[in-house]
Image (cartoon, rainbow over all chains, first blue to last red; front, top):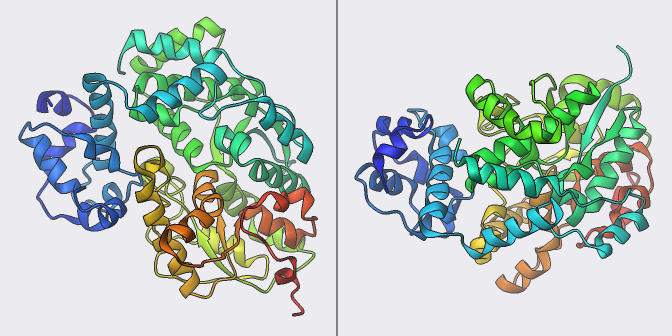
Length: 147
Length: 291
């Protein structure tokens, strides 16, 4: 995993400020339930150009680490960058594929079917339509690559 | 001040998986005399794409905002995920180069993002703009309950994007709960994330995280837990029975969307608030303040 790529990113470059205090790991809700997930260690491994494995997906995207980092490192934004690099280099995980399929078929992250629309109607909500624009936008965005 | 009017955007999870949240929010905002132009049928806000493809995130978010701009309205969201997705895209699209790239795609759909519409979560709107006093005037049935507030993550964090309240010492939701007459209690794990993001990858860890929360809420002797994000609600309400079975523990904590709580205090009936849709049973008697 290229340190150069991380450093060329607007959020990624903040990784250089790490002074190893560990408040990220100490504040991390995922680390409480999954000892192998250690944000400070992930930052170090990125810094030393080491490969980041599946454990990156234990980041719950809660932003507590980023909020508390005394050096204002964009830790959660870096985790999202690492997730994007992971998917690009190693392929999509099954749960990501499922979300992409829903977005392409329905325009929503969840499945929109007649049952769901009937439930909405029954409780007094308007029906939803599937949006095909989302699929077209995803295709165009994929041609464009990352921002 | 004239009547408040917004482009109302419920997002995927509230609209499809937790329609009781969509319903109760609409009916409560309606009771507060806030006018809504519904744009929920537009589809996804792009939140999930942030971890997949950044260009897709920014373009999907810009699309929603461009359509609200076309209506000449600010956007009112009810999901913490939509809130962060749109607010973050708005901040990033202040960069003209990036904005041009996004608009090149949006041009295919005759849309242009300019950045004119504001994005607000209804909690922010009620707390900062509508005002506690004005809500208080409309309370028809004051409650006397012990309520545990759960803010979730993306209403407050990252603060440089959300620009609202204070993650370490939040007050907005607590005050909105107290305006109903209820007591917003302090509890150990108030700031703990719901773990919803891990559901797809390793749901066991979501349940473990949620159990820590529910245990803490129970120990604090709360009558109920209040959420303001459909994903947090999905974890604590829809999955509560499953979590109880996994850890062989009984929580039995009703989980209400904030508009359900406020709606009861405003005098709306259970049906208009979708309370029959809640998974953990809500005993109507707990709302009788004369008990």
